[in-house]
Length: 374
Image (cartoon, rainbow, N blue to C red; front, side, top):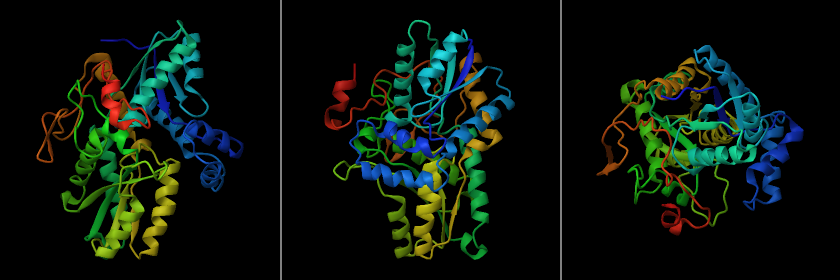
């Protein structure tokens, strides 16, 4: 089993103040053709809360919680889109003499943007630093780990309890995740490893989200409440199909159909309550629900809980000591049978994702599989 010199937290990054907002958004959207007026619109979301993204404080808190949970490794932090940039952090690791590093990303699922892009980020940073750079191993997806599911279930119970008592029995759970292009979702998973979900809209990404939602729902009020999986935070052009339905459209449909006395929105696709959760749900979705006369509560993401921090330690132990790979449910890595997933729990402690896993080339979804499979 490998011995590691350091622990690395991988995250998205966010502005630390008003002067950072536009440069950060330009980093995030570089090469995607996003109009300047759209960036200015999104920038207002940050200015409304002082210009600082909550994700930075949340990453610092998570590092402290992981150390408190017992992980005895030097802690480092590197981002994709803002300081501390990953390349700078890898250079610091090299200067500090690290040779092998275990990395944890603040994303629980399998897709290009949720997993593969972090692997690409690591490769680019290592290449930029050169021969002195350490080897960096990324921890597996953890969407069905008890340390992810159980805090979510507890948070859903808390959110339900905040609703008017007469509305709780008829409440509906609305699980949300970041929408991605349909073509990106279709390439999630690995054909060669049998973890892809062929011919199903959303691919493995949506399948893992659906499984996490099911696991949380069955641990809430004895599994008695209906639930749905929807999407939020779409940022692409109308000409490109993205995963749907949008959370606001779905709330409108529930109200029109009289299908819920109240809703609890659960950001199952997210680790922490960062800007997309705070604005898109606490502001926009809450406003939509209020305009519809639909009582609304939002469950907290698990990243600030001690159980989530201890999960990180357990995931490291899988790699370091061969501890059992923990997972809930019976989600299988390869089988999709009659709309239900079969097989053993997906929890692989393999050293690396297969080369064809979650490969995606924007704008060429139809040829994606052939071009990126060795």
